[in-house]
Image 1: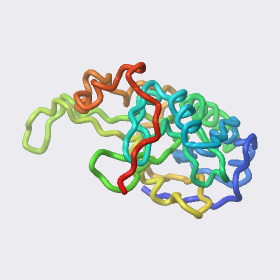
Image 2 (image 1 turned 90 degrees about the vertical axis):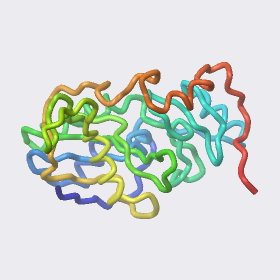
Image 3 (image 1 turned 60 degrees about the horizontal axis):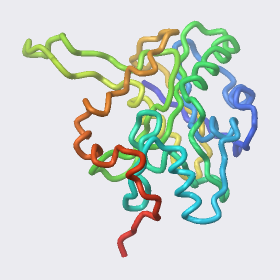
Length: 246
């Protein structure tokens, strides 16, 4: 698998995302995947807010979340079926503003998939909307796919045998998030100016029909559910500034 980050100018709010991609990506090979950071997708949709203080920021986070728990450094929230910090709201590289998540990352990926496939005149194309993400008990961020189009997001090993003939009962490979993580690695999180990345020769199955729920697990079936269950009621969450260690 080969990854090629694309360096661009700063993307502006309400700028046309399709035109921006065409001007920065002159060619795409058939069976490529284009990674697009969620930040520029959100900016193209005008998903920007201003918070004058921490309390107002907390209210915005709360409004964007299904539920929220005050935690160290941030709010731990449920947004679009995913546990994430601050409902995905980001103030880095935002010039004093807050950038929210896209309205619907799967729809955004699907629209780009259709337009770009026609523009580059290719049969197979994947599009993945990426964001940074943290995992329990692990330092640093990795990538996550908020939405994608053009390829299957999961490879199911259940029912197949391992190298010793043992039937696999649970294992599924999360392809979409794995690709997003690889792209976030080369796109960077600082001053790199790389909101796009091209993936070639990825081990994926291309398809024009994507199941938006194939990566999601019902909360009651998730192994982390015992941690979040006491806080899952929206009314139980108190809006307050998260505490920091001194």
